[in-house]
Amino acid sequence: MPRKNWPSFPEELPFETNLTLDPPSPEEQFSADWPTVRGQDVPKTSEDIPKLDDTGLRKFVVEYLRGEIFTSVNIRPHDRLAMTQMIFLPLVFGGLELITPTGLHKIGVIYAYMKDALPRSINGYPIFGTCGFLHTDDWGRAWLAITREQDREKTIEV
Image (cartoon, rainbow, N blue to C red; front, top):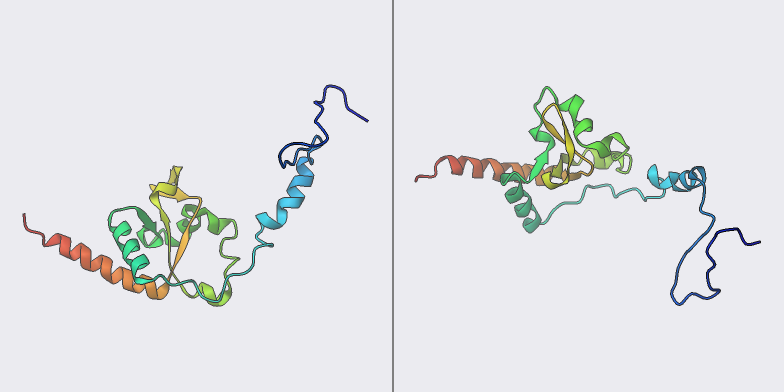
């Protein structure tokens, strides 16, 4: 039975579409989306945090030195425990649930790009809606390169 004041659509549309005149209620939509929100329909990651190749690691170091990347190491040591989840919001919302227990031990550092910072801060720290994980081996190599480049900058003569 046609409803009053509803537009009528031709039986055959010239393009593929998914028009519905009776969208699901918010409760129905929420229950349909809940597995995705909780990450239940996302497969668990592999045992390891993926390692970067030399080019990717070089890019990470350069971007870090430019100030384009914020890491969990940039949080003051006395704030790290309390502030990490407040700065990297995916951790609050179950971001680590997708990583196997063995993989958790392979996280060297948590990082995010400053361009992705939200328009708020907490105790002077940026807040991110996304974050990434760097493998412990990659972080060890990256940290050596970062400190070496920072030391080299101190000796530049002008």
